[in-house]
Image (cartoon, rainbow, N blue to C red; front, side):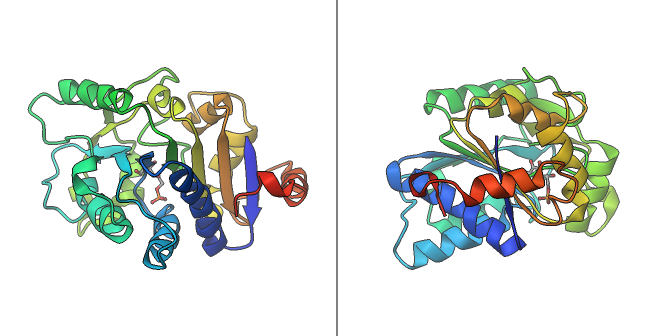
Length: 261
Ligand code: F6R
């Protein structure tokens, strides 16, 4: 894993966006794996600024969202379909027809999950997967005890996840109880992964994912099995990393050709 520790949340967004931008520059029809939540907003803002400057063009790229709540109306502003449209498709100039979100309204949710997983493979797989991490170590909505081999499926949200996401809803009781999420096995098939985390609330999850044992209790630790996973964190989210000095030294001494910022 490559661990990048930066001064501020803004730097986290800028550097992770540089990695995504490089993938799209090298391959304009790249397949993007799209996370929602607060963590990747800085990435999307930084990419949108570069699109506005004419430096990047996402018009030929496609995307697959990580997850969606079950049962939430598509028109609800916090459905991930609405969030992806608002925070990603519009500002980056993606073609809405090329971006998919799991169908949390499907009559047959299991079939919808299997179809979604297959569609990612049919598209040739995700070129770069953007991830955040929950304070409980989840990636996507793969809550603790998720199998490392799991595919896109229905999951029950952990009570702590529903509490954390209550900030997006008028009433905590409105937070859905279930979701469709790409599985850990699905995420691990992405060609590159960039996970971002900011703030002290993520420090424990980051240390467990990066330095802890491979464990279903910290689903983010599955990324230790990935060949090209980059973890970009601010100082607060890095606070519990035992080898922080080593990561800083390694990043500061990377040869020019390996840098992406
Ligand atoms: C979002 C997702 C989640 C979030 C995680 C962190 O699509 O799958 O794993 O990345 O819950 O959320 P924030 O970034 O809001 O702290």
